[in-house]
Structure formats: C-alpha cells, structure tokens
Length: 134
Image (tube, rainbow, N blue to C red; front, side, top):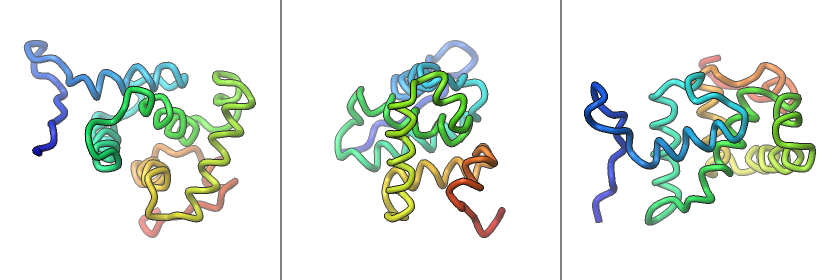
C-alpha cells in the first residue's frame, strides 16, 4: 500500500494535510507554538511517525511525539509549567530510554531536534547529547 503524502498547502487554495494539522495542534497543546518549528522539521516528524506505525499514526500518538519534541526545544522548566511535573518526568524517562536505544523512534525525534539546531542547550548539557556536525 502506498503511503499517504503530507501536504503543506499552496497559496491558500489547497489545505494542509491532516497529519500536519494534528501535529500543529499537538505542539500547541505541549506549549510550543508551531510557527517556531520549521515546516521541514514538521514534515520530517510526520514522516518518522509514518515509518514507525505500519498504517496511519493513531491520533493519540501526536501529543506523545509533540510532548517529547517540545521538551527538547523548550527545556524542562517550560515543560513543567505547561504540562506538570508528572508529564515532564515521563518525558525525561523516555529521553533517557532513547539514549539506550539510539535507533529507536524517540531517539529519532531527539536527534531531529539536535540536528535541526532547535534543541535547548540545557537538554544537550543535561543528557550529554552530541552530534558530529555540532
């Protein structure tokens, strides 16, 4: 089965695809304005999601992914204020687990934030993240 393509829209005539709209909504809910994330990064996120889920990513996956990405971009303080301590701790556990499985899905989201140079310096220092091109 061919994978459905994502669409950014064109001149206001063709709308954004549902997956990009869902990601934008999830980023807002995670307290990261979607305008702060380049469209190419958002396209990469939805493509990683499509690669991870065999069919279509479930609706509940978008907040899960956006939460991790927003944490990487904003850092623990803003994440804690926006989502609460328990949610922040859950995201931190996922990030720590991602370091043990470098080819896993969550590691791909963290690596994307790192390579896109959107990741918080606090997160880089706290988790000892590094990239060859950084």
